[in-house]
Length: 230
Length: 85
Image (tube, rainbow over all chains, first blue to last red):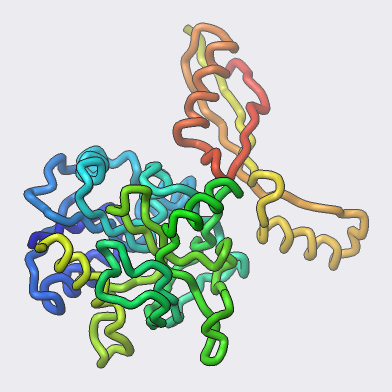
């Protein structure tokens, strides 16, 4: 399976993502420069983390108009998978591929730490290797990760089971919502209505090796592989 | 065609948590400005553009705001002024 990793000016997790796909998962990956108009046969598109265009105007606001985003949108409309991580999540929201927006962390601080997530929906093509309710440890690293949507949108995505990951508290508080950034309903990741676009602030590509703290992020890459290969 | 300067104010939507505005409010109160009730921190943009008349310049800028300059999910905008440049 071929993963296309989009590199915008200011992306900085593209190499980590490549490492996760090629070295940890053992699949093929290619970098897609944002000015290209060709996904080069990618089965899966990843919008990686970083600070595209220096977060000018709003995080993700400019990258959304990069030439390749037209092809990424068409890829998504065909029902093909798009994994949007961190800045990628911000870009996907700005592009209207996912509802809502990511605002400045409530603490006004850049937060870089391993957090615990609860898998709220294990029936997506990104999470089928997890169990519902499973707790996973994945790092976050962002200044603008406070998920925000209007009441109607929030009710809809909650009702449709589209909240895929939620931040939870420390040991013993696994049932409590807790948010490192002030996200509404402690939302860490959501899917679109069709279920083929996942946006998440945590970095699964940085959690692919126990030696580096956690391999809990591998489940996402393995889920994509098993679903698309099936 | 004339050259216009269109000033745009973009602010966080009312009702949304605005931690930056709250931090500034707290700082002002600490400084002794006890009367401060609330502060909203947004962006001020000046767009220089060619248009047939001020109304056209404003219309085009509004379009820019809806498509790029503001995000309607989280921000409100207003055209503060249109002047000849």
